[in-house]
Image (cartoon, rainbow, N blue to C red; front, side, top):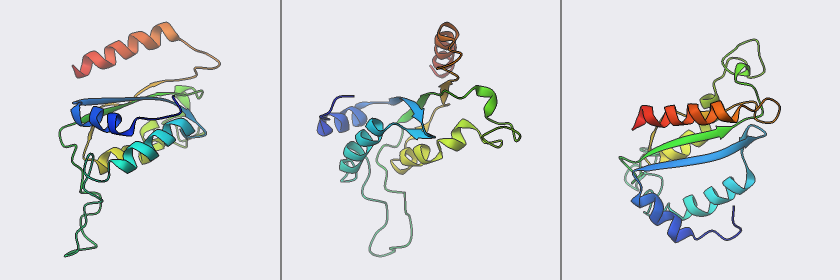
Length: 150
């Protein structure tokens, strides 16, 4: 990722797009610092109306409608993730993630996009990329994943 983010251009790209694809490796159970930096700069700037109108609350009812100020209604997003963890470590109550899915792990990310009123597409993931990579099949699965949505 580049050091200097053109925040206004990124906001324009989000407003223009019908679909936003977000690719990131998952490090320490979350997105990378560079992805987080992008989010902090672009999405914070988007709070002024480009992506949402504040947090959705109003003076008349300051405790109601939190997270309902999104202006990206109709825009879909897809998380595309790479993990060192094998796929089998998810959704198994006896394994590391204790039965949690990869979307459970990415819950905070999904909430970020819900805040902007974006709708999720099914998450795509490549697993075990450092010890047992299967790039050829991952590319085939990715193509099939996209074809299922378009």
